[in-house]
Amino acid sequence: MSKKAKIFPDTFLWGASTASHQVEGNTYNQWTVWELEHAAELAKTARQRLDWVPVWDEIKHEASDPENYISGKGVEHYERYQLDFDILKALNMNSFRFGIEWSRIEPEEGKWDAREVEHYRTYILELRRRKIRPVLNIWHWTMPVWLTNMGGLEKGANLKYWQRFVEKIAKEYGDLVDYVITVNEPNVYATHSYIIGIWPPQQKSVIKGAKVYWNLVRAHKQAYKILKGHRPDMQIGIAAQLANIQAKRPRNLVDVTVTQVMRYLWNWWFLRRIRNHQDFIGINYYFTDYYRANKRQNPKLPLSDLGWYMEPEGLYPLMLRTWAHFKKPILISENGLADKDDEQRQWWLEQTVVAMQRALSEGVDVAGYFHWSLLDNFEWAYGWWPKFGLVHIDRENGMKRTVRPSAKWLADKIKELS
Image (tube, rainbow, N blue to C red; front, side, top):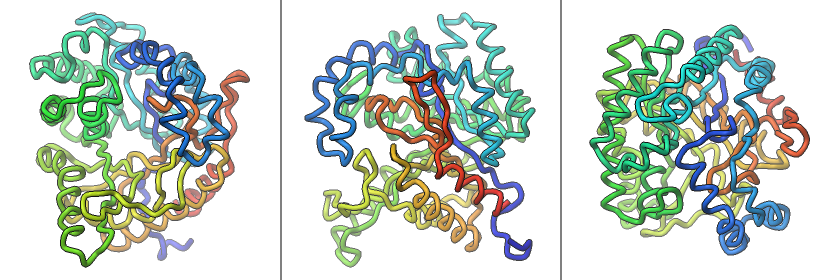
């Protein structure tokens, strides 16, 4: 590609994402406790919860096994991170989004584990040594058990522990990272954990959900001020799960009105609360949803292994709307699909690259793309069977890493566009 025709800027961040609990292994947080308490129940109810997914016949044995729902050794990323960084480099990526596991560095209230603090410093330095830009995600849903025993994020008073944690992050790693994501998908966490109640602590209270959601607004603002105080040039934002919400009948007033309300509540409410405390907008994009009146009515195909309707090109209008609202650089902080046979991932990636090209050509400041995920990982309440990784992990055979064909395609595309 000639320089004249080049669309992606030289500063563009090409990378992949992970979350500490989903890949590291041997964590001890509120999710770990919940997994052990609920694995048998999740396995027993697998058929009634999942027999509608397209790959049920292929995954039913795994999904009906309690071991599927226990993160356990993870994919041993904690021990094998240097190998994973070498794979990242071989895939022509120049950036990586990762998490700091709060429960590792503060296993007891007020007691820092110096060895774990140093582990993450070495981890970040190994990324930098490979000229891979680290993007640090402070909170990705997991918390120390001591904190959740005190009420977690339900109590505003507990934010003092959050502030202390962020201060520690700033002090230890602030000189090593240029980009920080404070919180991941606050809308998803508040909904799944406190409103529909399918994740720990399995509350079903709109009032508690709203309180947690508001406390996450406060948490982000507090973190922003602390981090900026340590390093004013640091780029700080959140990773918001934004959906491309559309009216099923574009000329129908009811559908259009519902769509506008849904967009505001799901996509924009949180971002508007923090609009003066963010340097970029992180978009986690998986879903295009069509609403007929107040009911979601998506096309039947194509579907991912999880049964999610897939419309990767929906990222384009979503980026345009986000840019129109906030005029802030956009990081695609997560984007991907469950596809164990790697049959649809290249198509997804092709359409996603085109969507970003279109947005860039129209003046949208798209600053980076992070695929979810670099590695097959523990997918929360679904367990191990959904495969989101650019890299396949054989957990039965020594955690062998195998780069999928779609990842090789992406590596070639990055080289072509860089």
